Amino acid sequence: MGSAPSRRSVIGGSAMAALGGMLAGFGAAPAAADAGQTGQPEGQQGGTRQFYGRYQAGILDEAQLHAQFVGWDVIWGEGGKKEQLRALLRMLTDDAQRLASGRGVLADTEAEMAADPAQLTLTVGLGQRLLDQVGAGKNAVGSMPEFAGDKLDERYGQSDLLVQFCSNDPTVLAHAVRAVGKNLRGLAKHVFTQRGFIQPASGAFRNLFGQLDGINNPAGDTRELAVFGTQENPSWISNGTTLALRRFEMDLDAWDELAVSGRDFALGRRQKDGSPLSGTSVADPVDLDAANELGLPKIGANAHVALARPGSGDEVIHRRGYNFVDGERSGLLFASYQRDARTSFIPVQRRLAAADALNQWLTPVGSALYAVLPGIEPGMYLGQQLLD
Amino acid sequence: MKTTKTTAALLGLGLLLAGCSATPDPAAQTPAAQHETQAQALQASDTWAKAAKDGMSAGFGTLHNAGSQAIEITGVSDAAGNEIQLHETVGTGAQASMKQMDGGLTIEPGQDAVLEPGGSHLMFMDLKQPLAAAQRTSLTFTFADGSSAAADFEIRNFSGANENYEHGGQKPEHTMDHSKMDHSKMKHDG
Ligand code: HEM
Ligand SMILES: [Cu+2]
Image (cartoon, rainbow over the protein chains, first blue to last red):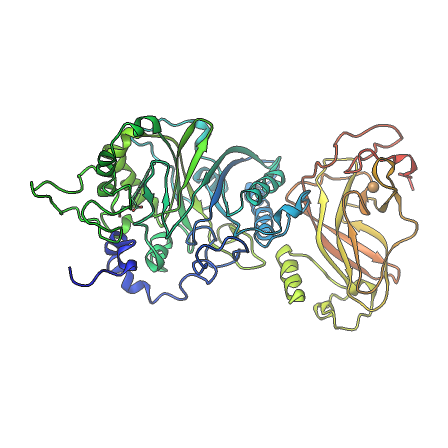
């Protein structure tokens, strides 16, 4: 090899290559991501993130240390459903905007806890059933199909409404979740709360298998393109996207029995430093054609990275997952944002479910898909582009 | 900067801050403008009311006097025709009790009247229609000079209060945050 590849062209390298020519046209689109959404100084723990913008916060931006994904089902009262959903989303918008700026919600009994939001973001998505009930967003996301190996627990199933709460401060996060939950009482039934944590370093984090996760996530313009599409080819709604949320339990006791070489072979990257088995440094590309002296592929055909790699530009997803430990159970709260899950997340997940070498130590117990709302300006409410 | 922030927050809430209701004039909202009526000096923010099916409920928020003269709120009304009183809390802790304010609510220039659970509040005496969470209701303040201004109150769940109603008097007594308060001093018919 000549000169060492730049970090940027390798991080997200396979996604970048897959998106190929689409990127050329993309550069012409107006104002990439609003400042404050992607322009976060890395590693900043305190302070606020801009709530308003072209996109919702909590998607393209750097993942905060703590997350709670909370699902609710709408309880319908009297009157038009669209009007009820509108009122609910107006309230949620007011809550989110206040909390993100370091204020309590209206009727907050502990507004002091909101004072330093520590990069708090609330990101709102809706399930297809809810969209159908209000007669909007027809066929926006559809429902999450069942995959081979799924052992779904209904506790972690599809909900009508999902809020992804993220902050660097778990206390702030707990307050935000509670404040929003209290305001929703009587209007929505709580379905699940899924908590997660990470310690990111250069865009990746150690998952509970010990692996560096997030290395080959699309970055910059590639990420934006994969998540929101283009003006000509947007997600289900302009500046909206979709969220795939899957809960994987890890069998850590069985994983313990596996030697590090076996672990590395199952993933296709080394536990030690995240480097692909086809190279020596984390910045090296995943090369599925690389062979050893015996002519055997360095990265096995069923290795996680071999199967997860996007086969085309349409398959690129942006992963923003979290580790979880819940009593005796540990695993990965897999969350990915993508323009259209039907052409990206779902085919990739099908491939993985069928043959991923990691499956032996993984049990999918939760699965849901959401239509994530576009960002808004002051004076608007989340979902306005859809419901008005 | 602070003004900009406030304005944005108010816009976000969709607060309706019409000055004198007869002649709504957006220019009159500018703090620098010469306020002709008391209503035009009112800036309401963070206004919300407690969700309730029937009986009593309460409204809260910050009422700011942006004018150069004292203003006095003498009455509050809504489209449903509810009886809405101005209440204050006297005493503290277990001894606290609330009563209707003597006269109106006066706000000195540049000052805030903070209406909050456990303090002064607006009291819906006997709801004619439910206050449903996530909806909003518009309240009209009437001032000593006869002017009036409306503000939107966001309706929210609130259970810092014990929600049981006690039937001690002729009317159910409300138990807000100040559930332990002695309501005997209240004149609900007043
Ligand atoms: C508990 C389950 C999972 C674990 C522990 C896991 C772990 C990892 C790790 C360690 C990497 C390598 C580092 C990196 O590039 O980020 C990786 C890559 C990747 N994973 Fe997963 N993953 C899981 C589930 C999934 C699922 C469900 C999908 C999508 C359906 C997925 C898609 C990807 C993609 C697209 C890559 C990058 C491949 C490339 O382009 O090099 N993963 N995963
Ligand atoms: Cu009272």
